[in-house]
Length: 374
Ligand code: GTQ
Ligand code: FE2
Image (tube, rainbow, N blue to C red; front, side, top):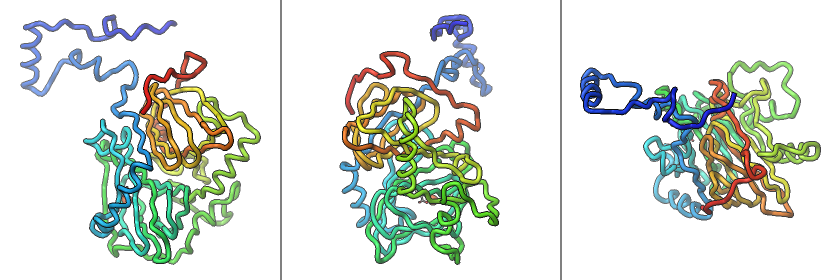
């Protein structure tokens, strides 16, 4: 079976030639809230995904001062959360960074706290800088260290703050708010006591569930999400380095590992997944494309990614996105050190709905031609 070309002028596609009689017919149908499928069929059934989002890079050097400026402009009490969000120029109407994913940078000063709330959308955090920051997720108080990955699953109470003794702290938030809204399933509640009260020891979750290959023998965990709510950078980086000694890695992603729910081996939350990947010294991956949206955060090092033929140079704390079905490859330009990319995605949704597809770049030994630089 050979694939046919993607021309709309063939049997199996809509190719009606409109004339005055048909136009009058369409007008008549419209009066009864109806329309002819063949007038829209080729648009609503594209040959392959036609992503609405632009590939974008948000460089920390451009944003840091602007994010810090918000400290003097609004309080967490007034703003709810003090977040500057990443707004894809082609997704303004849904406040998305890419596809149906929201992302922003949250900033708090020592002594500040944001009130507890919960929502149907899930959230995750990737810590960028500061000291003494914490989050409380359903009574679990978690300390936040640089490059730690923390989850706030769908429906959990959560609040954040920075201890009086800490430093101004910044982290990236990732939420599936646009997806939850698109599905018209979002709810929001403020906590009846404004802030959570909990007797659980600080960092009980990583202390109980964060040892590799071990789970508490006598503790039950009934929730659908991961009992491990914080994945520390030290363990993650160590895991990647050790894995790198025994594998050639993935041609498209280098040494890549997935954050998991230790109870199930599945994703930590229902709708969003996350990875950390290591690009070895000078590594240049091959290009591929797949369904699902991915938002990357440069955790370490420097390099560039080629996304849809455009070169995006990045360094630590830069954030960039890859919309669905867009070719992408990654390069670590440092010959002397590795580079690490954190990323989060909507792949759990793609997988559950059996929408996941992937393709290797077929030409030029898997490398795209660079047509522009962002
Ligand atoms: O910290 O709970 O960036 O609810 C957007 C929505 C952060 C949060 C965001 C949120 C939060
Ligand atoms: Fe929230």
